[in-house]
Image 1: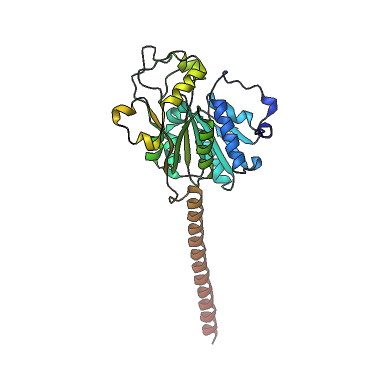
Image 2: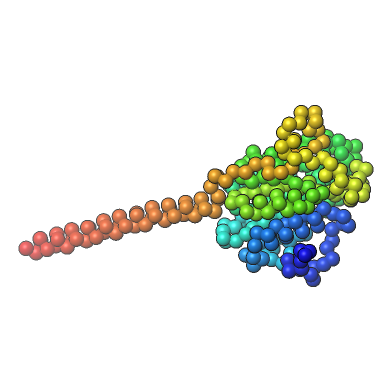
Length: 300
């Protein structure tokens, strides 16, 4: 029986604005199926985004949504989670939004290990704003602001998140939606900050400039470059060039979750204040008793 997406979507917002063949649609459908598989209540779930093509996603889903400022989705999401730690919070972001203007917020979210799931749609370019190169644009590939080729080395987003302290980091791609759904579902179930980097196609802005204008061709290329982690680890440095590993790259279930750590800190602080108040009350009681006894002694 085919999955029914209708309850999860705001039909009045259709049709969407993404380019025909855009990989964001594959990722959003995988994310919806993952939330459904986890039994998440839409009223107890918030999806947050910043700015860019990917940021349009929360506008199409029927749940609590926030479309925020460029690069600041994780800061808004952190506020939501701190105010309502029992709720589910998901952030969906592009590579430019997450790793450029939002890069600072990304690393601090990783180190705090707050229980938020971040899905990064890595298509290697700024799609919505005209095709400028981003922190993940491959070296030597062309962009609107790099017509002769990009000379900047690109970020390995997954390794960046692992180094910054994220406790679940996985990578998948739009050419295998079943595997992608599994990686996202595992991330949603993880207690702590989980990151799923999804290698995606932007055939409009990146593909047209780099001989992959057809979405199917570009998705096939991405799928061909993907290597399971167990196989990737056995490759030589020369054999890894142009390839990327997929799977669960890192998971740590022992690191304290930020909201729980903050709650415990509040409890310790409150207990200290209660103890201080109790001691002051005792001193006041003793002082009053001594004053009464002193007055009584004077009368005698």
